[in-house]
Length: 318
Image (cartoon, rainbow, N blue to C red):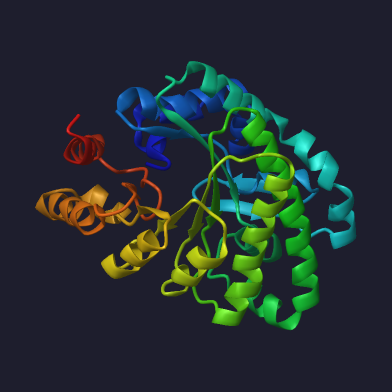
C-alpha cells in the first residue's frame, strides 16, 4: 500500500533527522529504514522503495526543492540539449537509490517482493515545465503549442528513466512501476503520444538492456483510455485509480493482464462500515482474475493506523 509509512509515527520521527526531503531520499540508510517501517508494522506482500518521482529532473540539472507544507518547487527548465548531455551522468547521480534497494532487499524476507519505481515522462515533464504541482493547464498548453519541444523533452526522460530503472532492477528491485500521476484530461491522440508511446519505449529500452523484471503501469485519471493503455503498453499489470469500474478491470483481466488498486484513500482514512463494504466489493468483482489489492492513490498522512490494519485483515485474514 503505497506510502503507508507516511502515516506512521516512526516515519515522522525519522523524517526530522534529515535536513530536507531530497537529502532524505538520497540517504540510503534512512530511505531503507523508511521503506521497511510499514513492512514491520503490517503483513504486506511487497515493499516499495522510498524515493520520489522528481529525483530525475534534479539528476538532469534542474533545481528541485520542497517547500514545507506546499510541496515541490523546480527552477527554470534547462535547455533540452543540456539535459540530453546529462543523461549518462544522471544514472550515477541516482546511485543512492540503488544502494537503498540493495539494503532493503538484504533485510526483507525472501517471500516479500521489492518494488522499484519512477515517475513517468509526461508526469515528470509537467513539474519540469510548470515548476510546481498545479492543475497542469500550463503543461497541457505547452504540449499543444510546443509539440516538438515536448517530444524532445519526453525523449530525454524516456532514456534517463529507462537507465534509472535498469539500475534499480540490478540493485534488487523485483518489480518496476511507472507512475503516470497526471494522465487525466488528455485527448485520445495526445494520450497516445505522450503517455502510451513513452511508457512502451521505456519498457523496450529496459528489455534491450537484458532486464526481464515485470512492469506495472499506473495511468492515473485516464478513465476509459486505460483499456487502450493496457492493450498497447507491454506491462504485466495495470494499476487502476478510484474511478475504475468493475467492467474495466474485468476487461483488462480478460486480456491477460493483472490489475491493481482502486480503493479510495479517502475511504481508507474515513474507515467504518463503508470501508468494509468497498473492500469486499472490490474483491468480489475482481476475484475472477489476477488482482493485487491496493489503493487508487497513496496513503494519506493522517490515515489512522487501525484503518490500515483492519483493511489488511479483511483482505488477507492476517
